[in-house]
Length: 99
Image 1 (cartoon, rainbow, N blue to C red):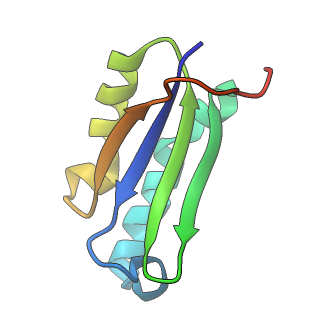
Image 2 (image 1 turned 180 degrees about the vertical axis):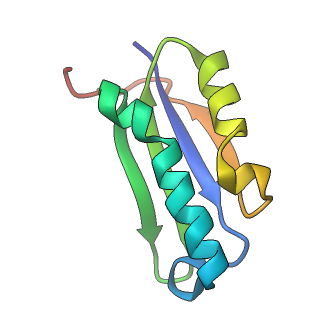
Image 3 (image 1 turned 60 degrees about the vertical axis):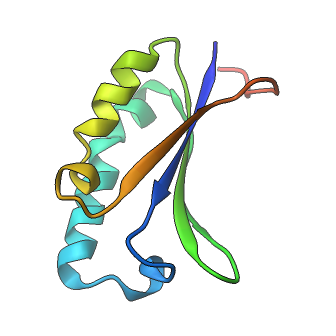
């Protein structure tokens, strides 16, 4: 089964540390939006990544249905509110944990 990597592009480098209350509410809705993928076991990893220079969101999703994944991501509250955007990638090789 292919694995897809989604990188959430935040509106500013220190977004994870400087969210406003309104942004935090959107991010809570964002996390809830992905719950179906988590509950099915399709979500391998999901959450913020902090580096020395910035922060971004990372999700790795194990699914055969790329189109449905893209449509689902387009409905994410961070996208619909234009708070953030996703970059998509498909893992060319590698290993995904067994289900």
